[in-house]
Amino acid sequence: MSSKSGFSRRSFMAISAAASAATLFRIVHEPMVARADWQGYPTGAVRIDSNENPLGPCAGARKAAAAIVSDGGRYDDHLTSKFEAMIAEHFGLKPDYVRAYAGSSSPLSYSVFAFTSPKKSYVTADPGYELGMMACPFSGTRVVKVPLTSTYAHDVKAMLAQAPDAGLFYVCTPNNPTGSMTSHSDIEYLVEHKPAGSIVMVDEAYIHFSDGATAMDLVKADKDVIVLRTFSKIFGMAGLRCGVVIAKPDLQTKIAGQGGWSAMPTTAVVAATASLQDAQLLPERKRVNAEIRELACEWLARKGYAFIPSQANHFMVDSKRPAKDVIDALQKQNVFIGRVWPAVPTWLRISVGTPAEMEQFRAAFEKVMNGTTVGYSLPPLKPERRNLDGFVMA
Ligand code: PLP
Image (cartoon, rainbow, N blue to C red; front, side):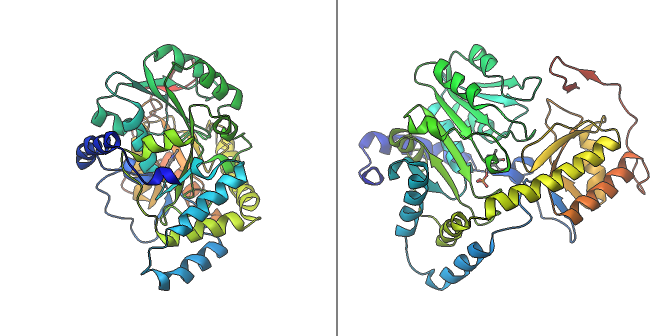
C-alpha cells in the first residue's frame, strides 16, 4: 500500500488547509446529528432513534474483541491491512481500493472537503441523511437538496438538472430516513451523465438489510464512484467504530488527504473481521429485522397510519401531526425515536428495535396519539397538504 506513505507537498498543504476547517468542524454520527449536547438516556429507555442494531456484535466479534484487549499495548496495524485486503478480495478489487476508518462518518465528511468547494456543489436527497450537508458550511459549499421521487427513490435526473456545478452527488440506498431504495440503473444513469470531474458517493450503510444491488461493480470499473460501508448497522458495531471506503486509489488519497489515515482500534478491526467470517450473520439478521419491521408496519397500517415501505432497519410513519410534538410526547414515555426532517414535518422515523422494544413503542404511540398520556396532550390535528411526491408539507 505504497500510497499510505510519501505524501506530496501538495497533499501536505491540503491537509493543513483542512486542519483549520477541522478545528471548527466536528465529525458527528447518527445520534449527534440529532443532538450535539446529548446527556444520555434515562434508565430503561427504549432506544429506537439512531438506527442501531439492538443485537450488537455477533458472538465471534465479541470473542475476538475481548481476546485482543490484553494485546492492546501494541500497534498492530497489519491487522487493518489484512482486513482491508480481505474485503478487497471479496469484491475482486486490488487491496488499495479499500480503506478502513473508525466508522464511515469521517470519510463522508472528508469527501465533502475533498470534492466540493464554493464552486462545486454538494447534491443530496430531501429527506436524506444530513451529515454531508453539515460539513458544507465549512467548505463554503452550496447544498442542493432534491426531493425524492413518488417512490421515494433519489431523483437522479433532477439531481443532475439542478446541479450542473456538482462536485459530489450523495446517494444513500436504502435511504436514511425513508428506508427506500434507489435502483442500480438510476445510479448508473447518474454516473454516466454527471458533470466531468464530479464524484458519486453511494452510501450503502443499510444495504445488507435490503434486496438492492451494490454499486461495487462501478468501483471495479474504475468509475468516479465511492462506496461507503459501515459495521455500525447490520453488524451491530456502532460503538466499536469501523467503516470502509471502497474506491479507486486516487479518490482514496484525496479523501484521506483531508484527515489523514489514523490507526484503527484493534478491537474494531478484529470484531469486523470475525463478523465477515460468520456466514449466518447477514441472512439471519436481515430476516429478523424484516420480520420485526413488517410486524410494526402492519400494526400501524391497521391503526390507519401511512408508512413508507422500507428495506432498512428503520421506517417512516406519518403521524399527521407535527412530528416534534409526537417525538417529545413519546420521550415522556421513555421511548426515543428519530429526529424531524423538515421536508416531511409530520413523519416519524422509527428504528427497528427488539420485539419487546417495539411492543413498548406501540403502547406508547397509541397512548400518545389517542391523547391519553398523563400530563401531556398533543395539539389538534392539522389539515394536511401534500406535494406532488405525496409528501406532507408544512
Ligand atoms: N451513513 C448513513 C446513511 C448513516 O445513517 C450513518 C449513521 O447512522 C452513517 C453513514 C455513519 O455511520 P458510522 O459513522 O457509525 O459508520
